[in-house]
Length: 560
Ligand SMILES: [Zn+2]
Image 1 (cartoon, protein in one colour):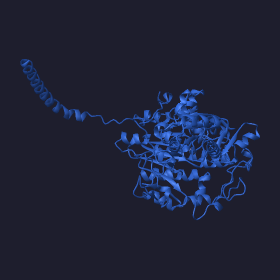
Image 2 (cartoon, rainbow, N blue to C red):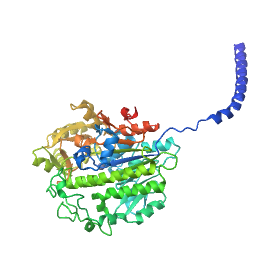
Image 3 (cartoon, rainbow, N blue to C red):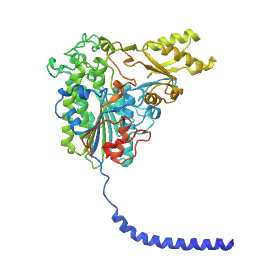
Image 4 (cartoon, rainbow, N blue to C red):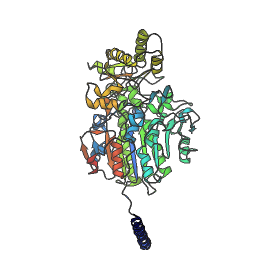
């Protein structure tokens, strides 16, 4: 034994000596080795520009095709990689979830953004997705600036790009809506900027910055919103050309506040005041204004001009505001898209001249689609309907009080989830399973409701697997309810006039997705692609780690 230990020690000694010599030689060689370190960089584009068009239904690419100019949407369709069959694979199809999914490749069950708002059992209150009172606004004194991405639990592709380049890459999010700039940009972004029409400024939060950069202050000083609004919103072309839409001024459209009719000319100059230019959101000028700010950001931050790949996440919020107000069949939405088409053409030319045609990676997509206005569908005998906001919750409250006596049995109905008051159920010694079964049967028999699912038992439901999967993907403990109310197709919870989105049906879940530019070939791909695949594809193209909660897969046809 002793011999063995001695022998081993000797061996170790020789080995160490040998190693030391090798190290010595290696040390000398290291000099050469160092000289031989390759300085080749992984090939990457100068910049990635993501353009999310809020509430752009997939069919808008084709519905207005014959009226588009040559180099806007048509250029992307002609020269880009067009994923024709891209669907949202979670519920609800709302703005915050959509923007988060596009840039995280993840679903509410992982990233935790279960809606624009949700009831939070942890804090026993309703929460707005990006509100964070730990921070103060920059460019605004109001709560419009008290924002951060803290409720989002996963990284974005921008966060991963920053990590991958040791934070040399810059990542910036821009939108009129706070959630549409903050959630795409991510946790480690350089900044996110959004519009506060009461401050007349693009603003940010102390989460990102101590003060607004000079280029933002200079941009705000130009007061462009007021200048745009002074033009009023008239049709771009002769009224007779809008043959893809129903006539102007339909009873199911929603006029702007202080407007008597939902028709052109929309005198938005009269709807804008010294104290608010918020109305710009509801006009196509909101898109121009956002592109103006995006160009200012590119120039102010020298994005894509510093030898490192940067990411600019732009979201155009106005198509969503216009869609809610007037619906997908309106002259207003058609005019918005014909104008946007021209703006996209101009913006692509700008990117060409700034970076060179194949040096930027561009993608166009949407956070969700939209339903046709139910009252419009009804005029064509297509089944449709609306639960006006709060009515369903009131019906359910009334029924629960009838069964179990007075009490706040239901805390909220949000994102199609019924949130039960578990504390009250427990203290009054009621059986929660029995309550769920009774409430499920009752709700399921209401007109306009297709099914009600127990969110904890969703896998056993008799319903198409893919749609069940989407509902399952919406479940995040503490931020989700107990029962999921699945409306009949073309039914939703909304206002009497105008429209909305949020369901698992195709008109809400089918989104456009076109990649264009750097290393992208022209192709139409009809394979089954999910919204979660977008971030996975960007990660693969850049050779960086996918976001930490990403469940999507790279789109193979793009990488081949
Ligand atoms: Zn949206």
